[in-house]
Length: 437
Image (cartoon, rainbow, N blue to C red; front, side, top):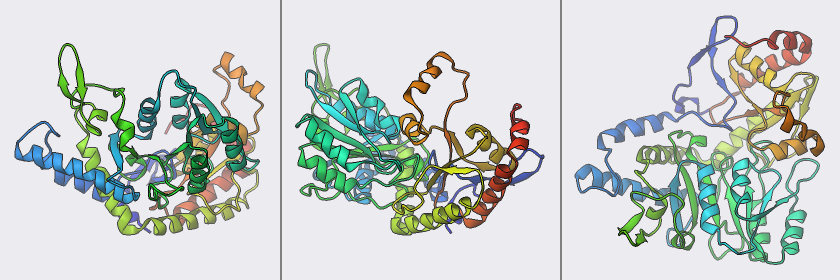
C-alpha cells in the first residue's frame, strides 16, 4: 500500500539460477529500509550541516537549533511532556538501555530489576552486572504472565527499582499490555521501562500524563527500525534521572568547566551525549516521524495486521510447519516465527534467499532465553553448547513485515515455502553444501 514511500523498493537481487528478481524483505524486525523522504531530507539538509553547540557561524546555529528542537518532535510523537521528560539521542535502543542502567545505578543498594523471559538481550544483559535481576515468567503460549509480575513485586517487598519490559516481542510479535503493567509496577513503587524498538514503528504509543498510574516512566527505541537507518536512537525519561551522577561516556560537549582538579558537568541532555552529535541521523528520524504521522500509526497497524493474518491463514494449510505464536491473538505486531520439521532454520532461510530473493531472519533473534522456552529445550541440553561450538544451534525462522510489504510478495513466499515443506529431503541434500549465488 505504501511501497512508493520506500527508497530502493524495486531493487533486483541475484538468485541461485542466475536470474535477478525483486528483493522481498521480510526481515523488518531486524532493520527497515529508508523512506525516500528520509534520503531527501538528508540530501536537503547536507548543505547546511555544521557543528552542534560548538560554533557561532550561521550553519552551526541553524544545525544546533534543528537538533535541539527535534527533541520536542520526538516527545510529541509519543505524547511525552517537555516540562518533565528529557530526550537523549543515542545510537540505538541497546545504547539507550545501557545508558539507563548506569543512570539508575546506586552502589551498595539492594535494588532489583525485573526483566522478563521474552526480552531481547538488550533489555536483559545491561542490568546483570549492576543489580539483582529476576525474570517475569511466560505462559504456555509465550505471553507475559501478569500474575507472576505481581507475585514478584510482592516478593521483593519494595526493592524492585524498575520493571524492564518489551513493548512488543521481536520473536512472537505479542504486544504487551504496557499500561496495565505500568499500573501494577507503580502500585508497588517501581518504575517501568518500555523497550519500544519493535512497537514504535508499528503501533501508536502514548507515554500518558505523568500523574497517571499508567504513565510510562522510560521509553527507548531505534530509528533504524522506523525507516531511518542512520545511526540514531532515543532514550526518554524524567529529567531528574539524568541530573545526578557522572555520564558513562565522557568527553567533548559533556562539560561546563574542566580543571586539573575538578569537573562540572553540563546539564542534561548535553552531559549524556558525548562527542559530536549525529545530526544527520536526527534529520533522518525527523523525516521518518513526519511520514509515520502523515500515514497514521493506527492505519499502519491495521494494514500490517491484514498482512499478518493473511499469512497465518496461508501457512496453516502447509504441512510440516510448526508455528510458535498463538494464531488467535490479534494484539500483535507483524511478526511470525516458525520452523519446517526436518530442516534446520538456517537452511530454510538460505533457501528462501537463494531461490526466491526473500529475506527472513533465522536463529534466536537476540532473545535466546525466550526461544529456549518456546522450543521447550531442557536447560541441561543447553549446557552441551558450552563444550561444542560446532553443534547446530536451536532457533526459528522469523517473518516480519513492514508497512510497504504487500500480498503479492506474501503469495510468492507461501508458494516457495510450500515447495520446501513438501520436498524437505531434496532441499536438505541441496543446501547442506556451501551456498553460492
